[in-house]
Length: 269
Image (cartoon, rainbow, N blue to C red; front, side):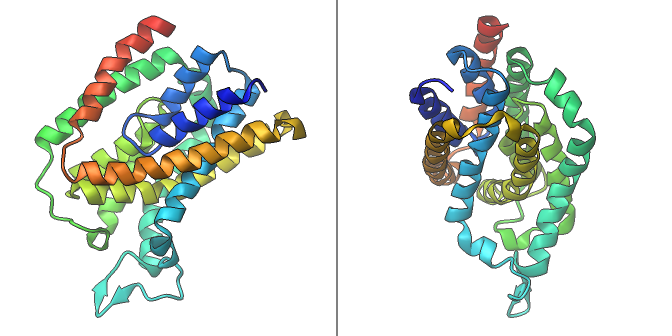
């Protein structure tokens, strides 16, 4: 599997970029090319360390996930909350479009869209989309997760489908969908984190099921290092991003994407 430092680098890259609007898949594809770490095992490793990032969100928002248990009330003092069956339905509406499209288009996506050139285009176009959203988004009228309705949840789910193009960023697409649906930045970001758990778990489990035969017991330490560093760096990234997004717009992330896109294109095309 190569030296452990490769696992260190990729684990940190995955964790830092998974929940930021810059595309973790795109960065992992590029990092893998630069490190010469390619092939079926490399793809399986990239999928596996996503579980570390997912677990970081579960750890940070464990109370939110605990409130989704149906036996716990979904309302408090007559006010609807993001909890119980209502919370599950909201997340289900957001997850459903990606599951359906991913099921039918998974093979084509893997074959035609996973590469440095397509990632470069997606990064650049995604950056432009973020800038346009920040400029023309409607006035926010949803200031917490409890104010989210079913139509908004489904709309965000449709935007999430754009992230099947590596480089677009699942975080960017869902946050854009949230902002255009009337959520403020913090609420859009937090819902993006929560909505990542079901769809990423399903997609990651599916990819691992198809690729498990590439793994051997000798790979355990390599995978463990990547997993742990992905967890730690994702937790740091999520906490930092929530703090920053309340003070500034998403424009810096957009400019970063636009700046790095041509570098990736000309360096790796």
